[in-house]
Image 1 (cartoon, rainbow, N blue to C red):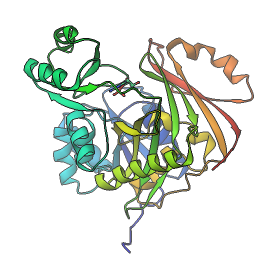
Image 2 (cartoon, protein in one colour):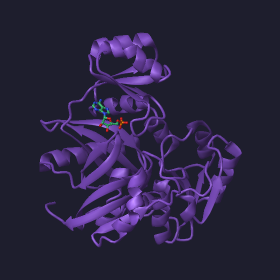
Image 3 (cartoon, protein in one colour):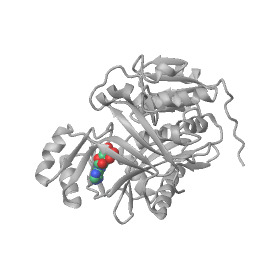
Image 4 (cartoon, rainbow, N blue to C red):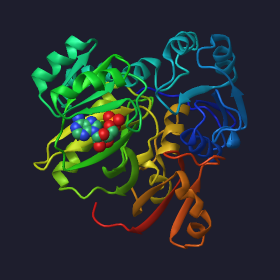
Length: 364
Ligand code: AMP
């Protein structure tokens, strides 16, 4: 068996990204005695507020990235829309310090690359076509039929960069509204519910999965996660097996969240991958001995993974925009576990915090 040398407490974990995922990863790192150092374009960010060090820099600035890598013992990322060119060159020189790898980031930040990868390893997705021109869009619609969804290949999140095409006559407008960007056209999946599975994988290739959870969206933004998802055991096993296969085939070190559509008949289609902690895993902080953030830290710093089993069932509710104004009321509720991200301005659609409520663990 490969012997892996873990980074000792006191080592520094670099986090590319400034958001709440970086913040919660840094808090988990601190609990294990590590220092966190974040890198991103904003000062006084949710991550910077809790990191021992924060570098304000541009992801395209190779010199700044090089200095950041030199100051860290291992580096991870908390969102996948990081420009990958400079990072790939810097990570190559820093042999193995970036976990998950830049190659995984490249696959997961481009819907065409991601779906090509998934289909190549035998994982079902929505039927799809790459759209690089109007002609591709017409041909794609002829093949997949309407309704369909046009999604930009890059930089999409929370429903941004997406247009539904209800009938073929809507195609030209949808394409124009997305600026004619390279995109994928997806056939509309008539799903019964949306679920996700988070898998962690360590340097030795051992993987541990959290139970599948159920996700409810409002205006394309995650609103609530129910853990565990209410599923027949065979479907839950299939979802975990699919996510574990993806982690293995990516040769992942870190965590990956796999978002899936579940049909009435129990058929699974993968929608999206996120090679980082995910909003649908926030419940693990309060309901599991080892959270998705600690698993990330453990994998990236070379520690063995912890136990992802839950001690409680959980419901996680995001606090979006002005919903966070109710913080005092939520804090006064003894059953509510409140998490706030330190964001000053509650813009509409902005994730300001979340609340977890626990219940007795039922079932496996
Ligand atoms: P995405 O940005 O790809 O995660 O999509 C955001 C949300 O849009 C998903 O969580 C679904 O609720 C919905 N959606 C995305 N793709 C499809 C599809 N092919 N068919 C039906 N609904 C979809």
